[in-house]
Amino acid sequence: MDSQVISLAERVRQIKPSPTLAVDAKAKAMKAAGADILNFSVGEPDFDTPSHVCDAAKEAIDSRFTRYTPVPGILELRKAIVDRFAADHGWQYEPEQVQVSCGGKHGLYNMCQALFGPGDEVLVPAPYWVSYPPMIQLAGATPVAVPLAEESNFDLDPAILDRYVSDRTRGIIINSPSNPTGSVFSGATLAAIGKLALERGWVVISDDIYDTIVYGDEPLPHILDVDPRLKDQTVILNGVSKSFAMTGWRIGYSVGPKHIIGAMNKIQSQSTSNPSSIAQKAALAAVRGPQDFPVMMKEAFLPRRDRIVEALTAIAGVSCVVPKGAFYVFPNFAAYYGKSFKGKVIDGSVAMADYLLEEAQLATVPGAAFGADAFVRFSFATSMEIIEAGMRRLREALAGLS
Ligand code: PMP
Ligand code: GLU
Image (tube, rainbow, N blue to C red; front, top):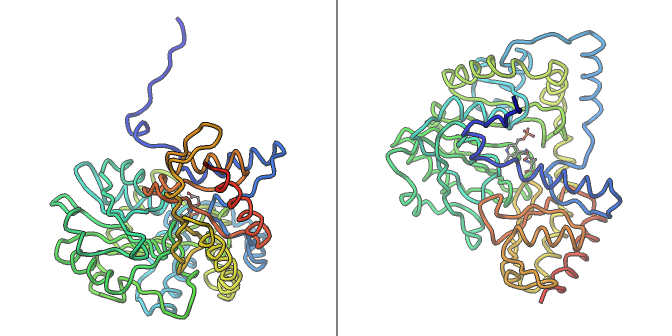
């Protein structure tokens, strides 16, 4: 008998591969083939993991800490996370309220699987991080994008929320500072979201993965500080990927009500089991140890942010909100849509990002991937030299459109 093409599950047909990782892979392949690519695509710190963290991993290997650990992670690490939350925010949690997972992404995936199902709707402020809608869809639920306006610095206008809420709404994902905008939700916005969440019994997912990268002196508002009554219905996502330049180690953590974390542990026990024992020891050194590394990174990112924003806003027709946190800028290139290069019309962010990659060897991520087609995302977690060279190429590339 001839071999058959095996059909795939319906759920996989609904989603696409992560566009951020896809652009990064394409840029790296072009670079390996000899192209002079300047990579502004994937969001990861351009710093090495600090030595004391690497040493802890070496020690874990040398002492043969190489077996299964408890599914939610080693108790020491969960305790360290609880202690860090208490020290940094004054929040009181118990280790049973913490799950350590294979990266922050996996924590969010577990959360969606544990919380949402068919018929449920989840509010996702847009521009959103690329993986929120697919993760909600993989749980069988429906993401509902709530638009954020560039004119309001991508803060959410609570007055419009009503239009997107239904009796199927089960929760909302907050990401402040945001990937891709770098914007921060104000205390007033968080209070308004919190009020609705309390009234309607929503779960609040607070993705705090960029909370160590906040520019300026103003404290970062957090929904749990704005309204502590939300603690029983909020799950916090964080991790060491961004704060300790540990993207490859794959350690993230979720903190929230015991029954939600318990449900997530069931899913983790039937899927990945514990995250890597060695990476957990490394993360322990990061969370327990000195906290000067994220501060050093933030100080290094600040002049890069200032320079890239200055260069972008100096280009005719380009507008750009100044990011208050994270390491992304999200300039608006809509003024260039409709123009062409060699007969090819730039009809949106995908065509623009393709044009920049093919003609200027600049790797960026199209705003469409974040639910905002007017924009293109640049990560400035790269050197000042690359920023300078990249902005020169961008100016020339945009000027080359007619
Ligand atoms: N949330 C946001 C907003 C992110 O940008 C990332 C980065 N990948 C994550 C979560 C997950 O991080 P990781 O899986 O690398 O720990
Ligand atoms: N969060 C990063 C980004 O947006 C890493 C890639 C990913 O996990 O999607 O570029």
